[in-house]
Length: 158
Image (cartoon, rainbow, N blue to C red; front, top):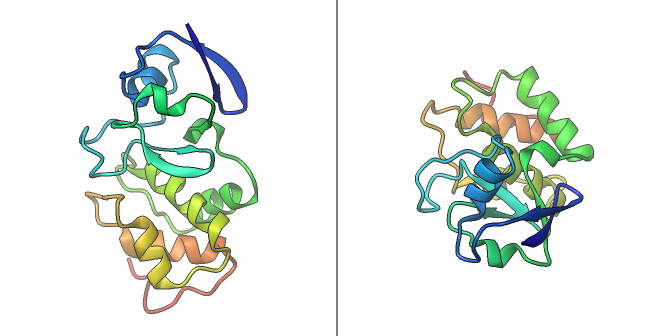
């Protein structure tokens, strides 16, 4: 039995050290907001934070989370998270919604590092999060809106 700090709470888990964090979160703890997408860290659907930094839970072994704060979409909070959720709703970002928890996790980490990001910073931070519905312009616009910026370069197009 191990104890991880997940969403601000010490949580006992039983997975082996090499078990992907994603499966511990979903199967053992019932935190299903973190999605399985590709299993190879290519799509970003499984993005969580380890000590505030976005990581892909599908390839992060349980042992790598030991002694670190794990934040999932269920535990994402703070001013940036609230602003992003509001902007996501205001701009109708989600279509199918499958990638959105990973998108929000990456966007929140970006805003914590860069409170007023440029388009280039947004593109770099979000590059590892794929959206099969193609809502990238709305994602960028929502990040700008959450940062209190005016959307630029036609990013509000739908």
